Length: 232
Image (cartoon, rainbow, N blue to C red; front, top):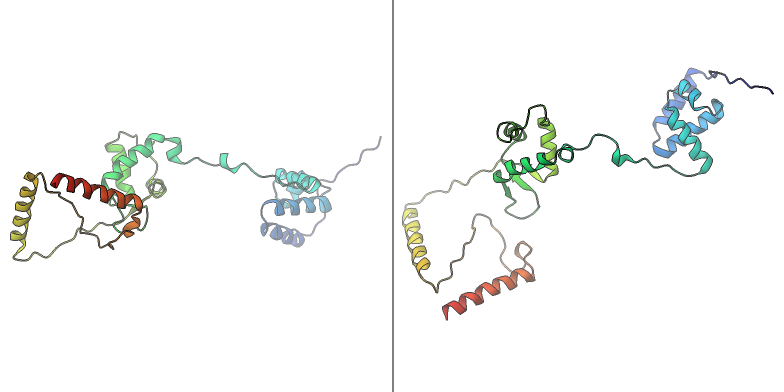
């Protein structure tokens, strides 16, 4: 029986190695592994360990590329189980505590243009409140940057909420006195229907305002018919 000794190195000029490494960096996934497998097959006796020694590539990736080149099948990585899990997944109570702190300080978009909840509380303030009010140990609470990412994933967006500063006219007191008087009269009148309207946001009126659909129109009709029955 004759044994064939495999060399522990190959005579490849350094300039050629640099070009091959540069070419490999331009590729990703299976294409890169196939390229490394071809280099290993042609220049390194199809040895993953020798290829790793000469070019600095992972011999496991080279071996996987050789198998893909041989079979023609692509191997997919199970990336979902790799890496660090999100803090709110590792600590379910953390998400609940953050929501309980942020929700009272949040408001929906007045124009209903998106589903984000705008909040006035910062990630730094949430970090502090988790320790002071929720009893979290400082080494358990994620960093401020991580809490900021969690707030974004939960649908909260930091925005300064400016309260309107209405201009007071001489008739303002008389107007509010009249409103309070009429409100008391309507409160004691069983045949009166009081409707609360938010006038801070300017929106269109009609069947399709703010996406009102058939259900909304039927609900409005039900309220009006209920009021008419009480009046009659």
